[in-house]
Length: 118
Image: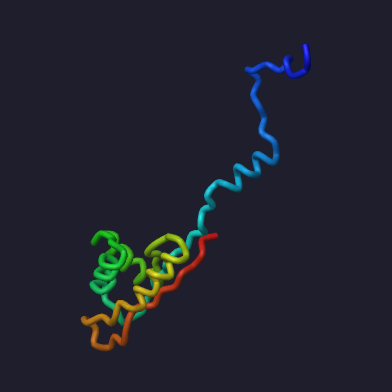
C-alpha cells in the first residue's frame, strides 16, 4: 500500500496558507463607517430640524424630535451612520437645506460634519 492509499477519505483536508489567503482576498471588504453630525445653533427651531430630518433622512417624527432635542441639549447629534460617500452627500444636503422661515434672524442652513467611526 502506498502513502496515497493510506490517507483516509474521511480525514479532513486542511487548507494551505495560500488557499486561506486567496479565500480572504476574495471576501468583500467592508467600507469604513462615518457618522453625520448635526451641530447646534440658536438660529433654527425644533420644527425646522424635525422637518429636515424627516425630509432628508426619512426619520419618523419621533426620531426627528429626539434628534432636535439632542442637538439642543448636547450641542450635537448623530443623524446617520453610513459610508463616507453617503455621509458626504447627506452633510451637503443639510448645508443646502436653506434657512429657517420661522426665525427672522436665521441666515442659512444648519452646520453638519462627518466623523469616521473608530
